[in-house]
Length: 531
Ligand SMILES: Cc1cc2nc3c(=O)[nH]c(=O)nc-3n(C[C@H](O)[C@H](O)[C@H](O)COP(=O)(O)OP(=O)(O)OC[C@H]3O[C@@H](n4cnc5c(N)ncnc54)[C@H](O)[C@@H]3O)c2cc1C
Image 1: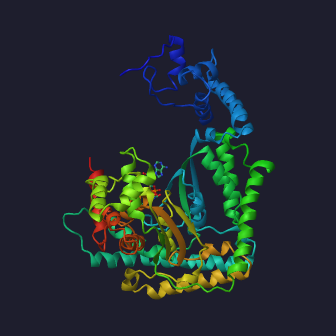
Image 2: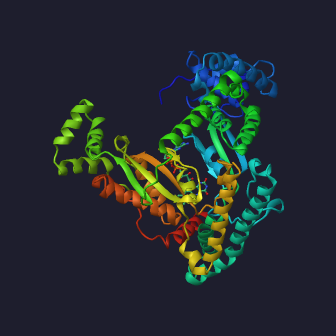
């Protein structure tokens, strides 16, 4: 390989060793350094001819204290000074994308979890309400949040506790009988291990019963994001109408400042982050007032579970033109003209070549598929919305959760004889919601709404993301409700948009009932676990 090896003295090598994974080659990772130093080192790339290792030696690692904590401390001080100049004074936001933190945010309600996972440029992992039974009581109470808005109204608080306790008790009471019922329905295949069988049955039962759980149900969320993503997240959280969200923003700021203090100087300064947060809060209030005036007498029309509300009839032709772009020398609009004049067969040939032989769903065609988009209006249960909301490469916006759109009753719940209990929980949840609204809790009223209630949200995505999302969310081990939503999206792309070739390219969409899928998934997991 052709590269210039940089010479370091033995003393320098000793100082570099703890922090650089390689001292000879042109590729190396930075380890055991504060985030701010890593970010500052990269930030210096733009204004210095030196290599990163040389910059470290010259500007961040002081001599005489090599390898010690003190050398890092000196480096940190310098890095923070650099930030103050580059980032804070000149507002160079890209520098704030160079430091990242893993942050654990535990015991958060579902509405808060959705706010934490709003940002596109972050990675999240969340405790599953599908794979973890919510039938234990850590600290002697069921796992749900009691928001401060409720706690300050004693009568309402009593009702809130009673309603949510009852929902969790109903869930815990049916978990055993439902698993028994499912075992009777699907006897164990002798070739399956006990573990595979038990996990399959339990997951199915959790899937069916999670609709009983309220939005206040707690979850743990792990986040890996850059300083800039955290800054944006905190600014949004501080503008929230929910006390829980604002309180968690304060906790997060304290912890993040222990790791990346320099990146987060603006968040709570009144004239910087404060003004930013105020802007978010004011515009949200203003648009709510405007909407109230413009829409107060309008009755919602009925819609299917999934409606394709916008698409480009010319979408496939544009994808064909885009597919040819990178391999030609022609202007974009000329290619579009050519694609329009092609016969359907000629266009299909281009698309077939572009899509190629997809051996699995991870083999995805390129950015030409980003040339056309679909906008779906969806109304499905909150539990499944929570899952679909996890996709980032799209635009998703949702309305407030309420009991107004009705609820789902899974067929397994009917079959095991739990439907009356289910309806009871739903009714009490709706009554609690109304009582909370009457008490003036407009936003916080969502906490008590069961996850089986439907919520309306919009998802707009290009064909490339649609391929990823629909193929992933129709895999047989997925939840039946979001599988149904994703299957409907696929049908609408094909039939309503008339994008037959794009729909056909999504060859890993699974339109089956999916019954055997979960078992298959557990078998695969077990095979992977085996040494
Ligand atoms: C059966 C099933 C079970 C699941 N169980 C859990 C669970 O227990 N807990 C849980 O938290 N989640 C769970 N998920 C959700 C899953 O982890 C993802 O959050 C979700 O699928 C959305 O993310 P994505 O990467 O698939 O797609 P999108 O966010 O839509 O992104 C599309 C693509 O963009 C790229 N991309 C997106 N973000 C990044 C990034 N930060 N860095 C690099 N590339 C990126 C990737 O190629 C990705 O595939 C489950 C999903 C399924 C289908």
